[in-house]
Structure formats: C-alpha cells, structure tokens
Length: 527
Ligand code: B12
Ligand code: SF4
Image (cartoon, helix red, strand yellow):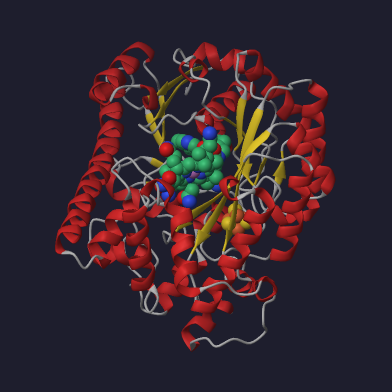
C-alpha cells in the first residue's frame, strides 16, 4: 500500500515550491488518511543537501518518493546561478579584444561547471534518496517531475535509476493513480528502462483536474520549514489562477507543457487561498499562470477574480504576473491598479508588427499601446518589464528601428524610468516551432541534445542570435555591458537608436503583407 509520500523539491533559488504544495494538497483531499511530508532543498545550505535528505528520509520512511525539479536551463540575460550567461557568451563569441574574449571564455567555463555540477548534484540526490528510502521500504516508488523534467523529459532518462517514473506537466492525476495502484499508461509519463516516452508525448492534452483552494493549515503541518517563506517580506508567493495557453508563439514551450486548453480555477477558491496566505503575513503574490489573461475571452474571468480580491478587503497586497497586454479593458486596468499589481512583464518580443506576425504571436501592437495608455490612466505607476528578443526571425535594420520607435512610445506613456527593456535572446527550447525550424533548416541536427550546452557549438545555436545580424547585436550588447552594465537594457536601446535611428511609429504598427525575406525564413511562417 502506498501511503507515505515524501516530496523533495530539488535545490533551487528560493522560489516558493508551489508545485509540490499543490500536489500534496490534492492528494490530501483525495486520500485524507495518507501521510505526507514536504522537504524543500531550496531552503537548505548546499553543504548539507545530502545529510539533510538522509535525515528526512530516516525520519519519514516514505514508500513513494516524489522529486520535483524546477529549473535546469541557465540561459538568461540576468545574473544566473553561475554568472551572466548572455555576457559570457557574447564576450566569448564577439569580443575583438583577446582579453575580453578570454574573460568570456572563463566566465562561460564557470557557468558550464556550475550547470554540469547541478545536473550531477540533482541526479546524485535522487539516487541517494532512493537508496536510503530502500532501507525502510524495499519497493519504494520513485517519480520525478516539475518544470525542468517537463521540458527535458526525453533527456533525463539516461541519468535516472531503472524504474523511475518520469512525468510531464501536472502530476496530480498520476500520483493519484500511483496511490490507487492503477495503470498509469494513459498519463503523460514513462518508466525508465521499461517504457519509452511516446512520440510527441508533451503535446498530448493533460488530464483535467478541478482546482480548489490549497489548504495551508494542512500544508504547514506536513512542511516544517514552511515559515522560511513567511519571514522575508520580499517573496512573491505563487498562486495559480488558471492553467494553459491557447497561443502558438514560435519559441514557447508553455503552451505544450500546460496544454492549449485553458482551465480557470474558480475565483472564490483563488481568493480563499490568497486569504490563508494573507493571514499568515503574505502580502506579495505571483500569479503563476503562463498568461494571466491568455485571450480576450478570459477577460471576464480576470475581472471576476480581481473584483473578488477587492471585495475580500485585502487592500495592502501586491501582485505580479505575465500579462498579454493586448487583452486589457479600461475596467480591467482599473481593477489591476486597485488590487495592487505593482509589476508585470509583457513579452511582446518585438515592437515590429511584421515580426509579431511572423513569430505567430497573434496580437496587435496598436491595441497593446492603447491598453497601456488605459493602464496609466487608471493610475498604474509601477514598473513594467518589456521583454524584447531581437533577431528571432527576419530581423532587419528597419524592424529594429520599428522596435525602438515602439519602445519610445511605451516610455512616453509610462515614463522612461518605469519601462525596463529586458533584452533577451531566445534560448531555443525543445518541442517549439523554432526548434522544428532549426532542424528543418540544418541549423541543428535532429539528434542534438538540448542540454549539451557545455559543447560550444550546441550552446551557440541554442542561444538564438543568427547571422547576418548576430555579430552586430553581439557588438552592441558588449558596448552596453562596458558602458552601463547596471542599466543594460536601456543602454542597448540607446546605442541601437544612435546607430540606426527611429522608424515612424505608424510603420511599427503596420505589418506589410509581403516583405523582403529569405526563402528559409519564409518557411517558418508556414510551419
Ligand atoms: C511563473 C514562472 C516563473 C516565475 C515564478 C514566480 C513565483 N514566485 O513562483 C518567475 C518569473 C519568477 C520565474 C523565474 C524563472 N523561471 Co520560471 N516559470 C514560471 C512558469 C510560467 C510557471 C511555474 C509555476 O509556478 N507553475 C504553477 C505550478 C503549480 O506548477 P509547477 O510548479 O509546474 O508544478 C506542477 C507540475 O510541474 C507538476 N510537478 C511538479 N513537481 C513534480 C514532481 C513529480 C514527481 C510529478 C509527478 C509532478 C510534478 O505538478 C505540479 C502541480 O500541478 C513556468 C512555465 C510553465 N508554464 O510551467 C516557468 C519555468 C518553470 N521557469 C523556468 C526558468 C528556467 C526560470 C528561470 C530560471 C529563468 C531564468 N533563467 O532566469 C527563472 C528563475 C527561477 C529561479 N529558480 O531562480 C523554466 C524551467 C525549465 C527550464 N527551462 O530549465 C520553466 C518551465 C519555463 C521554461 N521556459 O522552460 N518563473
Ligand atoms: S509566449 Fe505567452 S502567449 Fe505565447 S504561447 Fe507562450 S505563454 Fe502563450
């Protein structure tokens, strides 16, 4: 009988482990009699990982071991665990000064070492946990899942012990079936050494689950270190309000991990969950949805939720989320401000309507601009992070000029200091249209390993910055790192404007039907 479940969240920056919290809450609601324990290695100093895990297993003696692995990929333009990956990669690839090149190489090497160490460390912890748990229960089951495993489920098999169940996406139903000892054949999972992942398994639609407010009185009972996240005031605690995204953006994997069908968590339940955290002192919430307002048809759901937050009287809270700013209305803007939204990220990727269409992002930049005006008029006066990924497809000097014009228009609305341009270069991810494009165009081999970023020729292709503009962007970013590393995004925008000038805003907002593009790039449009 499977009745003692231990959730181990593998080492991670201290981001609230909402995934395991929801899993434990769900199983408790279905099987109130089973014993559960949450153990979060995100709160343990690195030198103690192994011994703390041993101690926890010795005490709890689980017969189901659930390992949750959140992130694995360190590409980001910001300081990651091993340094700033973008700076290192660009210094190594594009610097003319051999000393800077060398610095990039050394930085890259340091990051790769951190990355490989983390892979070894986490797989080591999984194996160690299993071995230890076998002392108490010889047929203990081992399941691994979480964000990182969902994206790289095909690669992790080679590191896991035989018999490990590798899971993609939400794990609630899978765990339920394991407890009931039912067949798991129809779940998005496979068993290492016994079954192979089905072709395109990640694209299968997840089983629907009804979500109710997480019961935090129960969670604090099974998680002795829960207080860790209550002590500091700056944690944004995760709360899910919906799951899934119906869009098709060419570089994005969320839409397959979470599924295209959007599930709305009932507003009353979301507020009930927030209220429990509020009563424990939490004032900052991160709505963990892939998109808080995935499409216009979900505007009413967002309005309902925010109105209920207003009615709840939780007046001194703040929240943040990923927001498609094409789906705002003046009413929604008003509610967002009233409920304390103090940060949001709009991933517009480009300020050129032509490129937005080519990346299949399905929104209208003119609408985004108008909605931002409405948000400002509603009293929004906090930080907006605007994510730009240059050079995804068909970028040209004129599309860069359009992006700059668009960015200046956003600055005119919110104020220069309130709009933070986050300059990303796409980290190519498996199961995306961009990956298909790269394989079909011989940029990547079909059997490439997306985790082999320790191989410079793989890393360079995964950090998407193709020629002919690749070196130009490399040079601009290096200049910005030199000039003002603390205000990197704004400096990049200024340098680009100095070099290329601005397009008329109207040009940015209109997408010509035809454009000068290479045949290869045109293919992406019909993928
Ligand atoms: C919201 C979010 C953020 C927010 C988090 C805010 C907060 N306070 O919680 C912010 C913006 C801060 C963020 C930051 C980053 N994120 Co993020 N984030 C997400 C996002 C969109 C949702 C994660 C989430 O909380 N979901 C809701 C919870 C309930 O779901 P969950 O945690 O996935 O858990 C469920 C399942 O995974 C499963 N499950 C979990 N564990 C287990 C275990 C078992 C055994 C089983 C069976 C199932 C299971 O069941 C759970 C319940 O349904 C995901 C993408 C996505 N759509 O999933 C990326 C994602 C998790 N992030 C990712 C990354 C990389 C990052 C960064 C490291 C990026 C960076 N390089 O800077 C940073 C830093 C994070 C850190 N550790 O320092 C990657 C991780 C995978 C990877 N590529 O390595 C993801 C998957 C996105 C991607 N593009 O691939 N992120
Ligand atoms: S980038 Fe955003 S809108 Fe596009 S598919 Fe991903 S989650 Fe959806």
